[in-house]
Image (cartoon, rainbow over all chains, first blue to last red; front, side, top):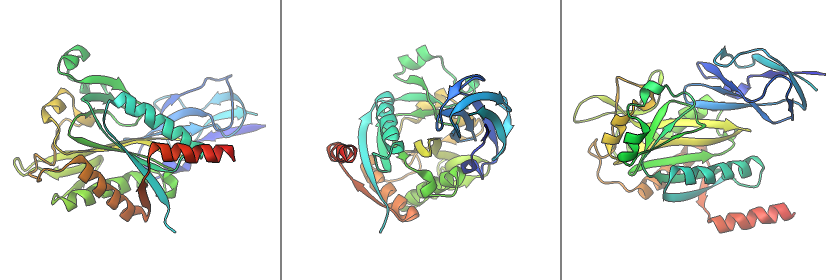
Length: 78
Length: 238
């Protein structure tokens, strides 16, 4: 089953969000709740958690990309 | 019934030691064993490089900084480069921020408002500057807008860490070793430089707690590490 990784809603209201870094690589096995990426506004670093157990199959945004709340940035096959 | 938080004051402590404590508190808070906490501290001189640091904003090499008694470290908070040192008030709210504000951005703005309210108590008018975070004042001697309070938080597993500082009476010369927060056209000031009567960090801490509780309708109480460890052990045993 495929799970999508979205920029979390709690970042809403931020004027600009950058995908600072991926903390895992495609092919890595990850657990639900693991920190898998970091997004940042001007003053807030936000760790994005895995929504499910599985394997990261796709990164749909690159490091330093500007991203939006709710944007799908990766996929997990669980 | 008001939500209860706890507070600790680590006093004068190295940034690294305080951060170890902060990370452990954060993990316990994430795991549900620790209440939301306001952690206060004063650090020895150190420059911290946030995730958004631009190298050009560090104006001195590490060796020269060391000779001046200023340490250098990379940290996990957002934002650019910051200085911490004696005479600077630092508070790290380690808490489930979504219980206090709708979104991290609003939470940051609430923290800024708390600082503005605290400064008002001491007779200083703090302001926000559009497009820039933190709190600013017009310095009486120069008439310039200067930053008096910096802010940078991280959120992991829904719990915040890092926080904000207020310059009470730090050595402002130390700020000249960096371009604070990457802002080139604005300087940094302190409550002392703005003509405030001498303020102790513990007085400021107490005012911050009052302003925090006023903002969020909470009740923040002091508890000792021993008391909390006993509570955690009881929770884990059950």
